[in-house]
Image 1 (cartoon, helix red, strand yellow):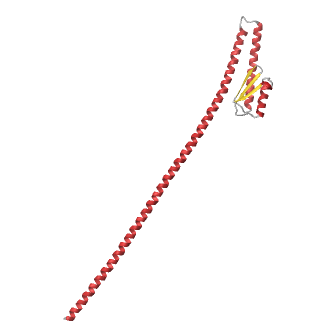
Image 2 (image 1 turned 180 degrees about the horizontal axis):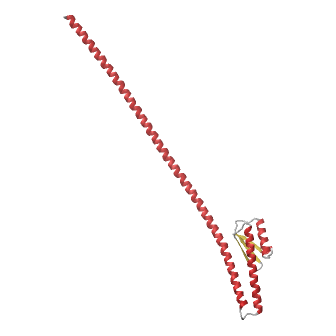
Image 3 (image 1 turned 135 degrees about the vertical axis):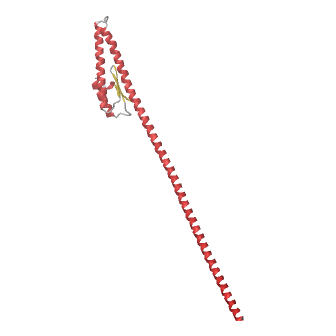
Length: 211
């Protein structure tokens, strides 16, 4: 009976020991799983943070790119505005010059027309003397010849590269206004030769100016 009790007691200790060992092994496995889970969670958090940082950097880079593009666009617009203003100023200046020459020629031709009209009244007047009529006819011819000579001279000057030009005749004095920023000596000589030949003028009586 005593031996049986001892055997049962030993068996009880063995079972208890096995339970303790099993509990320890279970605890160790649980700890490992907890650590692994924590590591995975930390890894996931780092990955998410990494993704957030990457996305943030991408957004910041996109914003910087947009700002740079906006600045570049504004610079292009500014440059374009400056070019347009310069072109507009240039066109306005060109228009003003063209207007000056057109107006000057119109005023000159109007003056000649009025002079011819006056002489024609004398020529056709009932009370005009023959000498007056003859003088009036000569003046009319002289004016027409001058107008034709001026027209030819202006056309020839145009062929030399100066389309804006106007010529005024006052007796023996000839004045020519040329649309140019400057004239080379060779160009001045060409214009002088045209005026001298077509208007039968001396070089000393020819005056050339630029506008």
